Amino acid sequence: MILREALQSATQTLRRAGIADASVEAELLLGHILGMSKTQLYTEPERSLTSVETEHLCHLVRRRLDHEPAAYILGHCEFYGIDFFIDCHTFISRPETELLVEKAVELAHRISQSGKRITIADVGTGCGAIAISLALALPQAKIYATDISASALQVAGMNCRHHAVNSKVELLQGNLLEPLPQPVDMIVANLPYIKSCEFKDLSPEIINFEPTVALAGGEDGLDKIQQMLEQMPGKLNYGGCFLLEIGQGQGRMVTSLIKSYFPQASIELISDLGGIERVVKVGL
Ligand SMILES: C[S@@+](CC[C@H](N)C(=O)[O-])C[C@H]1O[C@@H](n2cnc3c(N)ncnc32)[C@H](O)[C@@H]1O
Image (cartoon, rainbow, N blue to C red; front, side, top):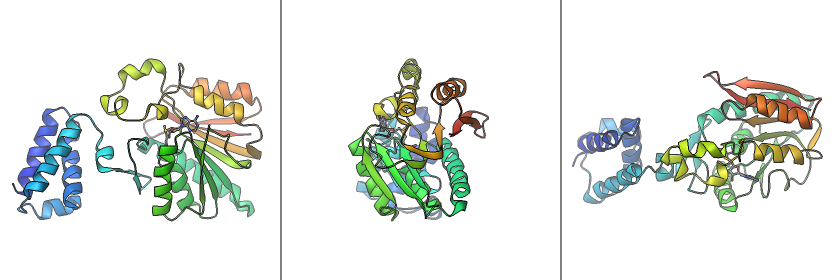
């Protein structure tokens, strides 16, 4: 088989199975096998595939037909323009979380105008996407990244070394803010926020492959956020702030939850480009 035929065949198979963006996914799988960029795939359409390459493609297409997300098949995801290793123990970082990073960078620049070396905690770091994006954007910052999952932290460690930020990002295993060795200036978190009743509506890609510990937010989706608010006293420096990603429609409930713990807090809900309230920014 030649490359053009392989691409067409994989695209058709994925499309027939109802996979959205079938052509993009076929390009990703084939590019991964051949070690070629998307452009290279189209500049060498007559290149022959060896039988091993053809068998490998069939195997990866079968995995995708079983609803395994392409990011897990490839072992990579892109976030904030940066490539991250991932595996089945880590959540696949989503583009909507880039808003949290953007807002955190803006705030950090403002805080560090005073010449202070800012300290940040990324709580529930997963593969380390938020912490490492912040470390690269804020070279002076000291970042702690916590997660309950030791396996996820191993992947975060690989990403820290790969992006040469291991001296700036300290990985800590434990429950939410508990492992922090000192109070920080800013806390950022994309914690699990899916309500128990929403699980039945999740796609097989999510429910069968992403770690439940990265998704489950309890009955109202806010269990982890509430636990973190309880732990907050003594973990945030005076005048500190925190930024949380929230699920669609959770803005009002999260705002009143925060008010119940911190009545004096200034709270801002920030919407993404789709108009969905996505980030809560809180100043204490
Ligand atoms: C939605 S994922 C987000 C991962 C990553 N921050 C991102 O945005 O791609 C939530 C993460 O929180 C972690 N987590 C869940 N419960 C936790 C807890 N009690 N303490 C620390 N981390 C927790 C999960 O292991 C998972 O890595």
